Image 1 (spheres, rainbow, N blue to C red):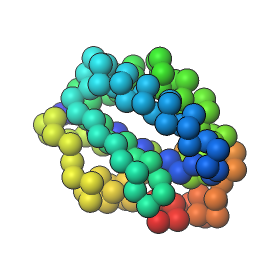
Image 2: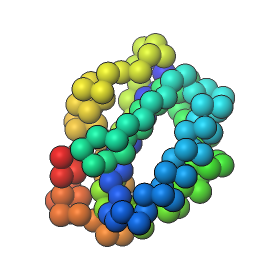
Image 3: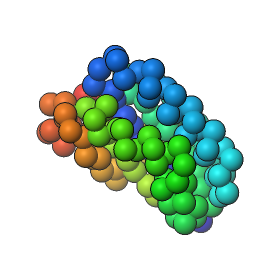
Image 4: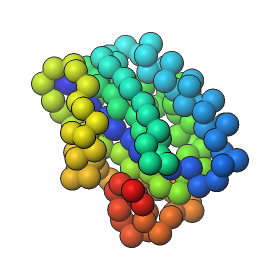
Length: 131
């Protein structure tokens, strides 16, 4: 069984776009080189940034999350984002789920991440934000 991770982040101000892009690029490169990363994709959709990754197991996912560029980026996101959510689940195989499947899983099983300046949607507990 592999472990899937999905994130959705919406920046609260345009001024955070460039530093976010820098951290996102570095985190993406880190994931591609990480032991246990089986697949990765990212997109911007309806004003939010999404990542979708598949990992060999929970330990590989946690090892990536808590190290290097990704750990540095995580420390910024609660200030930069007004909407943030994450979801994890297990699946057979290493293939990325389709975006519609991943969005559905996020809507049903995801959870909000803490942000310092929540949007009205985040404050209302909407996992998929204002979309």
